[in-house]
Amino acid sequence: MIIDVTVPMLPESVTEATLMTWNKKVGEFVQRDENLIDLETDKVVLELPAQQAGKLVEIIEVDGATVTAGQLLAKIDTSATAEASAPAPAAAPAESAPAAAPSAPAAQANQSQAGVAMPAAAKLAAEKGVNTATIQGSGRDGRVLKEDVAAAASALAAAPTMATTKAATPVAAGDRVEQRVPMSRLRSRVAERLLQSQHENAILTTFNEVNMKPVMDLRNRYKEQFQKEYGIKLGFMSFFVKAAVAALKKYPVVNASIDGTDVVYHGYFDIGIAIGSPRGLVVPILRDADQMSIADIEQAIHDYAVKAKDGKLALEDLTGGTFSITNGGTFGSMMSTPIINPPQSAILGMHATKERAVVENGQVVVRPMMYLALSYDHRLIDGREAVLTLVAIKDALEDPARLLLEL
Image 1 (cartoon, rainbow, N blue to C red):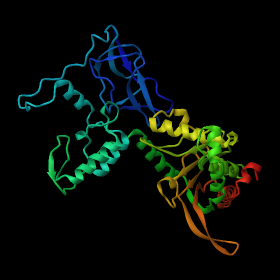
Image 2 (cartoon, rainbow, N blue to C red; image 1 turned 45 degrees about the vertical axis):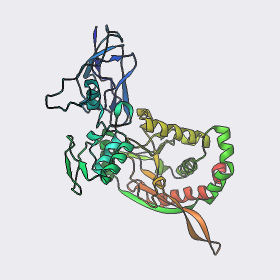
Image 3 (tube, rainbow, N blue to C red; image 1 turned 120 degrees about the vertical axis):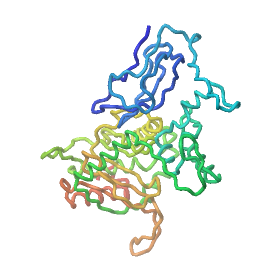
Image 4 (tube, rainbow, N blue to C red; image 1 turned 180 degrees about the vertical axis):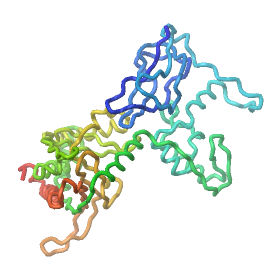
């Protein structure tokens, strides 16, 4: 019996998806629930498992195709057995092919896998001028990973020639090369939303600096006991989440949003945490963060980071949010003006902690200092509320006992 493999119902607000890489070739046997291909949407990556076991007899939509819900992708013969199934034979080599050409199955595998680059790898390849079609990837099913591109770029830099086309045509060293790659759906969506934010919000940013010594001392004092008790490392983000929630309770307009001509005041605190992933920046949500303990926050952030790395974030993980926090300091940023994540009205930017000379009680001392930035929509939030919100965050971090006493 021949059954159809179709695109499943897509999440709400998602109209189409992009096929990534088929995990099976025509003629191969597929087990029930085995993932056939990943579908990349502008928010999440979805797996498409086989509904029944059988032989993959036809692939209708190829890698990179744009598809919609219900669209036919492939066909499976459920009457076939694993023993009777085998990869479809490759075409005979051309007469002009060299005698030492690889065998048909190997040639077919290389053709289907080489150059299939993950988004992060494709971006790096574009920056380095590397042709991913010439790289044999080390990822699953031969996918080209970021480290594969980095190795290829190093090899090209040392070689007298370099490849610039899919046919690996050599050109003289020193020539200027380019590579055009399509944006991933996630990157396109991020670009669209950021541009929308810049056009529709009156974004203003206020800055302050915080002495991180009290938080660092507290963390160093309890981090081993904390990890032993909860099985998770004690980081800094949980302190910032707690400090932000405390400030938002004092100044609820910063936790509000604009809907047409109305202001929506949220009686809950859903904090978005910006996380870098191989697909780009994602912002999963800590729901009801005011009801979470430090350990709950650290565990949730860790789980989100793992899911983001593995491409397992669900749509509900990324939906909603009343306020966001982004940490550019992870990459060494000293100061930035973060862009609001609509429909939210404000975002907190953390930066690198550096030892600097500061004056305390008339004395010059060295302290680990961090610049903080709060970008806000000036249509809704006045400068007074924005500045006082950032000061409240600073005060809570410089005296962590305030978080416990809710002062």
